[in-house]
Image 1: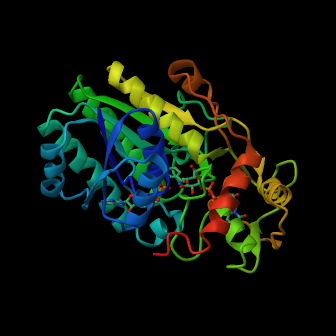
Image 2: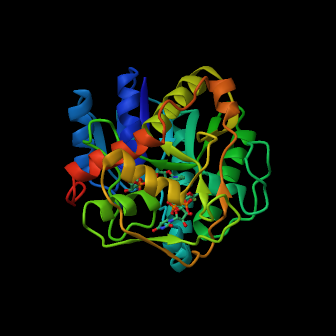
Length: 338
Ligand code: NAD
Ligand code: UFG
């Protein structure tokens, strides 16, 4: 059975490719490398010992992606292909709407043409917006998003739901990720952000490796136990395993389902820094600074549904996440060197 990974050379796609191959699936990767490079897939090949068919293609280009459906017997698609930097989406909203929405429409149109009826989508906890109380349940309504990136996710969820309503044979799984961090245990693949990282963990590890001088912790006056924001950090390999369970499920069920992929356990920014330092025996210079616009004090999942329906739950703890992040960073101080 072949699974098309749209945006599969990226951080989550590459880790998911490993888990799918190890579970017996064939994968085909399509990516325009706008935020990744072919090296990640070469590393996945090394880890798994399997050759992966890859296409360098913009997923928005319906004609170009048709070739993939003609040349391969695709059973399911996982749609990772998207732009994901929250701050950049505020600066360049049209680029975000164009890329994220168009990739979705092209995939749906082409799937329909080639009678492919299963799609899994990389959504985000950001769609719960500001109004819903934590923990977030899948039954809650989508909220008011705080930035264009979040809106693209909310809109794409709606598009998938509408498409499935119109075509009852189309199965859709919307996976709402919380905060993926960590790397494959081998240290051969991991997160490789361009330029200055926006997200906490790559920033922490770049300070630890000496690439950046000091981490600023954004705000310590939030109504949380230590005053810093809490998030539901999830090991990227647990997240990858969640995708395998979603593929298993969608291949056997005609469904439209939403699943939170998180641990259900929030940790604060200060706890992340302290755990990283303790597990890896290394200092992370940090200072407390002003709040960052748009940050919620708390964000964490109720992860029961994924366990009850998919039989999935996380296996790795915060120490594993910090250790594996550092293992990747110290072995690859320049990431993939792109
Ligand atoms: P990533 O940037 O590493 O991977 C996305 C991949 O999509 C990249 O390889 C990029 O080159 C590719 N891509 C983007 N636009 C494309 C296009 N038009 N055509 C072909 N390829 C294209 O990001 P990631 O962290 O692996 O995230 C994967 C998905 O999960 C994204 O949709 C993201 O929004 C979503 N998500 C990520 C997080 C997170 O914290 N990492 C949280 C929630 C949701
Ligand atoms: N943080 C710092 N300093 C930094 C970077 C982050 O203190 O240099 C803090 C933030 O203020 C926040 C926490 O670390 O409290 C986590 O921030 P991230 O940027 O790593 O993650 P977010 O929770 O803001 O956002 C992530 C994804 C988004 C997604 C959102 C909700 O990056 O794509 O989760 O799912 F929309």
